[in-house]
Amino acid sequence: MKIAMIGTGYVGLVTGTCFAEFGHHVTCVDNVEEKITTLQKGDIPIYEPGLDALVAKNAAEGRLQFTTDLAEAVPDAEAVFIAVGTPTSRRGDGYADLTYIYAAAKELAEHLHGYTVIVDKSTVPVGTARQVARIIKETNSAADFDVASNPEFLREGAALADFMRPDRVVIGVESERSEQVLREIYQPLYLRDTPIVSTSIETAELTKYAANAFLAVKISFINEIASVCEAVGADVTDLAKGIGMDGRIGSKFLHPGPGYGGSCFPKDTLALMRLVQEYGENLRIVEAAVEVNAAQKARMVKKIRDALNGSETGKTIAVLGLTFKPETDDMRDAPALTILPALLEKGAKLRVHDPKGMEEAKKYLPEGIEYVDDAYAACQRADAVVLMTEWNQYRALDLERLKTDMKELTFIDLRNVYEPTSLTSLGFNYVGVGRK
Ligand code: UDX
Image 1: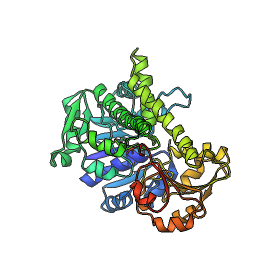
Image 2 (image 1 turned 90 degrees about the vertical axis):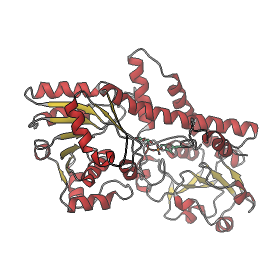
Image 3 (image 1 turned 120 degrees about the vertical axis):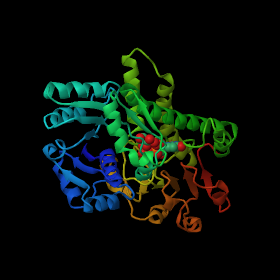
C-alpha cells in the first residue's frame, strides 16, 4: 500500500519507518527542508534506539522516501497520515495548538487524487478529524476521501518495540471502506494477534487522552503514596509490589519519582482538562494529578535541601540524568528543568551529566551549570549526588569509587534505583522517594 506521512517528528518518523518495515511504500513529508535533507543523507534528527538502522534499511530497500513536496507524496497515496506537532498553545491556556494540523489538511487537500483516507495520527482534541474533513471539503470539493483517527501509544525510547508489538491498535472510522484501508495497513500486526479496536472517530480521539490521563493519575497516585510512606515510615517499593500484583491494578507505572515529564503527559492532561470544560464537564481526578505532579517536583527540591542539612548554598551537587526518562535526548517538561534552576537560584554549584541529553538540556537550562562528559567526573568532590534519570549506566555505579571521590557521602536517588543498604553499608546517607 502507498502511504504519505506528513510530519517527520518523533511520531511521524517512527510510524512511517515502521509502516515501511511492514512492506508498505511510505513517503514522509516535512516542510522543514533541513530535516528532509538530513533524512535523505541517511541521518536522523532525533535519538530513538534502533531507528537509524531501520530508516537506513527501508530507504535502501526503496520503501521509504523523504520529500518537502506534498505533490510527490499525496496523489498516489491510499492513506495520508497527519503526524505534525500539536504543542500546548502559546496563549498559555492549556489548549492544544492545532494550527499545524489545519495547515496540513488545507495543503494536502489540493493534491488528493482518487479515494484517500486521511488519518489523524497526532494527539488531537475530540472533533479535530471533523474539522480536518471540513477544511478538505472547502479546499477541494471534488475530493473523494474519508477521515479517520488512529492515535499512537508509543513510549519514547521504546517506540519501535511498542509499534511492532502493541497491546492494541485503536482505529476511529466512520465508513467500512476506510476501516478496510486501516486494517490492511496494520495487517502484519493482525497476523500476530494484535487486537484492533474499531471505534467511532470521537471515541478514538478521546481514547488517546484518556489513556495518557489515566497513566498520569497512576504516577501521581504513587508519588503521593510515596510521601505518605515517608510520613509513616513505610516503604513504597514494597507497597507498589503489594498492590501491583493485583491484576486489577497492575504493576506498571507505579514507580515513584521526581514527577512525570515529557512531550505527552503534561501537554495532554492540560488539553484534556480544557476540552472537558468546554463541554461543561470536569475531570477533577486529572486536575489533582496535574497539581500533585507540580508539587512533586517542588518536594524534590526540599528533599535535596534537607539531605544537605537544610541549605544547598555553596554546595556542589552532582546530577546524573537530565532527560525526562532514559533512552531519549528529549528534555521537554523534564523534572530537571524545574528542580535544577531552583537549586541554582539558592547558590548550589551544579555539575551535571546525561548520556544523550546534554546538548538539548543546554537550550533549556539557565547559565551557570557545569556539563561534564563522565558521570564520575561529575561526582568528584561533590557534597551530594542526585540520581535524576534512571539511565542504565547509573544503575551499577562503582560505589567504592564514589566513596573515595566525593567530599560528603550523600546519595539522593530520585528513581529508587538502589537498594538503600548497598549505600548505607558503605557509610552513605541514602535518600530515596517514599523509603525509610
Ligand atoms: C507516554 C505514554 O506512555 C505513551 O503511550 C504516549 O503515547 C506518549 O506518552 P512517553 O512520554 O514516551 O510515553 O513516556 P513514559 O514512559 O510513559 O513516561 C512518561 C513520564 O512518566 C516520564 O517522565 C517517566 O519518568 C514518568 N514515569 C513513568 C514515572 O515517574 N513513573 C512511572 O511509573 C512511569
